[in-house]
Amino acid sequence: MPICGGYAGHVLQVDLTRGKIVVQELDKELARNYIGGNGFCARLLFDLVRPGIDSLGPKNVLIFAAGPLNGTIWPQSGRYEVAAKSPLTGLYGEANSGGHWGAELKHAGFDAVIVRGRSPKPVYLFIEDGKAELRGAKQLWGRSTRETEDALKEKHGGDAQVASIGQAGENLVRFSCIMTNYRAAARTGLGAVMGSKRLKAVVLRGGLDIAVADLERFERLATAARERLLLHKFSASTTKYGTSILVELMSEIGRFPTRNFQSGAFEHAARIGGERLVREYKLKDRACFCCPLRCENFVRVPGGGRLSDGKVEYETLSSLGGRCGNADLEELLYANRLCNLYGIDTISCGGVVAFAMECYERGLLTKRETEGIELKWGNAGAIIECIEKIAFRRGFGAKLAEGTARFSKKFGKQTEHFTMVVKGMDEPAQDGRAQKSMGLSHATANRGADHLTSFEVLSEVGFVEEIEKRFGSRVMPEAADRLNPKYKPLMVRDGENFCAVVDSLVACKFGAVWPPAFYFADFAAALTALTGIKYTEKDLRLIGERIFTLERAFDIREGITAKDDRLPERLTREPAPAGPCRGHVVELSRMLREYYRLRGWNRKTGWIPRSRLVKLGLSDVAGNLAKFKKLPK
Image (cartoon, rainbow, N blue to C red; front, side):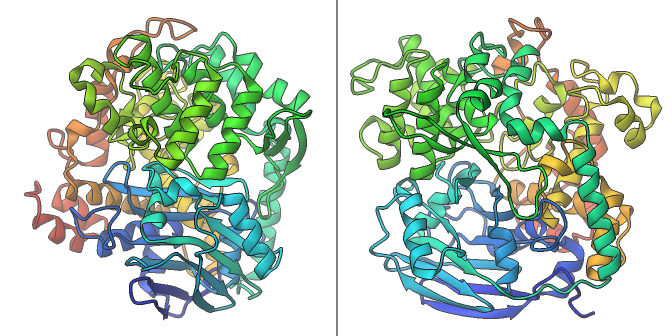
């Protein structure tokens, strides 16, 4: 079976230890059964990373992957996936970022880049039109992501695409990220993996064409998809505000984490929300590759104060804002800028600072231990100080740089109730008490607490028509009620499988999933026209489940069981104090039982039975797991 349209057809193998680079043909069966992006990462990581290895050691493998849609005229096709064993969680680690880097990787001639070993000195990888070389990066080491990108664009041309780490990645901050022109592949600490390998950046220049099997049909489908996005009732506000408008909306329904999830309603939401941000600070709309929505609001703080420019997302306005009780928008924007320059995941950064603030407020941390930083709720200056110390692992910052889960261990059981992490990763900006499906999504996600693994938004706003279309009228009206746990396991499982496909294509969820413009059948038609390989909705559903299950198998090999599919006690035992969800908790045990049944997993252990793996075409995975775990039949 020849490699068809949508694939560059090559994989780049990079051995940093030996300084050796090899170009290989893309495996045809890998492409057919895993699509690209997320699917490639899951399969390759499971095969190449041995369980128990040090995530910051040379045996870890770092994978950058594009998908068949990248670089084409399909709307919102500029994203890419990057994966490795996570330094933050010790589990399956993956991140996703937008912009133009993913499209450029395809036009540079590659579907994936596999990086092994550790360079004896700082280097960067330069890829151009099917060729690649390692170059010295001594002069770039110690510089910010912005400085690094500017220097490399000056050297290789302004249209070069750069993915780089800042000082946080170099200093092995466990939640450091990879930056591409103000956009972050943020979660799970993959910037630290690049830092551990002494890989400062990956630079792309591409001018190669991408073949399309049925160009006329693909153009027709892509044009219709673009029109559907533009005509959706939520698209105008998406362009105007981006994700920032969610601040006010989520606070109104009690879903906006406030003061380390003590509440889901922030009394100062309007001061840091989308309306004010757009009114006072927005400069222009920016778009990722081939995106009609242009949701990236570029902002700048005027005047002679601290320079704060770039883009800011809902998650950051939550993590460095409401989660820390911070209502100072200009200082929040400056904190966001620092995180981008140093290469820090704003979610986990805000998570560990908010946790430290609660410990300080409770008297568990003293001013002496924080080196004079007064970690009181709303102290914007303290947040800035912490970010500076974290990036360089200075003093108290070195403890925070280990992440919330590790830092909290110094307090023993005293902080168990309000350590807001799942499987080692900080909860993102969704209080599951206000939307039960998100609570379940955070608990079952393979990379740790995560809203994008499932991104179940249908119940959030009561999309009755879309829910009925996908699941049938029998699930109504409970499925559309965000506070009712009934049918949420069905919707979460479906969302996890669908998002695995979207991340493998690679498309943007802010359009593919929200607004809910596309579904399995739409992508099956596009993929068929693009590659010439017949895909059906049934095929993509199976592939999505295969990918998600393979990630779970990776985690099982690292010791994950049903006991780890949990939420912080604050969400399951402490009723929400405010908003329409007042008095609610997350009924996690009830939802998990149904979720395991739908997945076909063992309800006691959370492991995947051999028969289920075989059904998904993962017989080899069953054999591999059997060496480590006694799986149920």
